[in-house]
Every structure is written in structure tokens, then in C-alpha cells.
Amino acid sequence: MAQGQIKGLQKQKGSGGRHAAKAAAAPKKGKRYIAPKKAAAVKQAALHKELSAKISRSIEQQVAAAASSGKLTIMKNVALEGTSSDKDKDKASKAKKS
Image 1 (cartoon, helix red, strand yellow):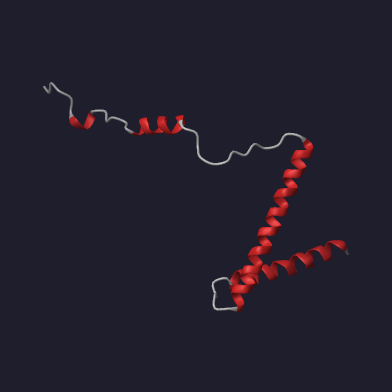
Image 2 (cartoon, one colour):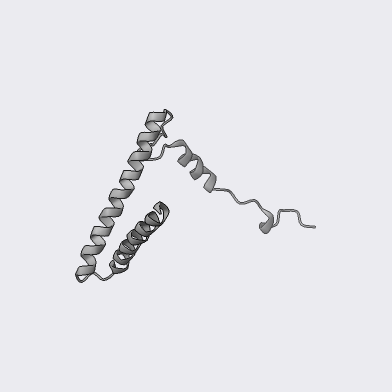
């Protein structure tokens, strides 16, 4: 009979646990965002988010339009999508009004 443990059945040391504990102990880098709780702050945060999205969308469309007129043909599809989506939105809003 075998008197020692078989190599395949031995438990392997978990070296990953030590790293996980160390990572959990240290706080993450970067800014923290705490969601607002007051009604006015919630409304302001929603407005800020909406305006930020509009601004970034506008910038992307401008860059795409500038790129499509020049040698940068990668952005041509984005420019076409931006103009077609604006037309679709206008058609949808007109249809809802009538």
C-alpha cells in the first residue's frame, strides 16, 4: 500500500488569494461618484447628463463631417448615420404631432 499522498491529489497553494486580499485592502484610484439623493440634485444631475450627451454627440458629428470631406474616409459612415438619424427623428416628431 502507498504510504504517502499521491502527487495529483495534493492541494495546490492558492497564491491568488493573497493578491485578492491585498487589492481589496487598497482603495481604487480615481474620483468617486455618489448619486444625489435630494430631488433638486437628482434633477440637476439628469440635466447635466443629458446636456453632456448632446454636446458629445454634436462634437462627434462635426468631426465625422469634417473627416468625410477630406481624406479620412473611416468616419464617412458615422457622418451618414448622424444625418440620417436626425432626419428620422424629425419625421417621427412630425408624425406624432399630427
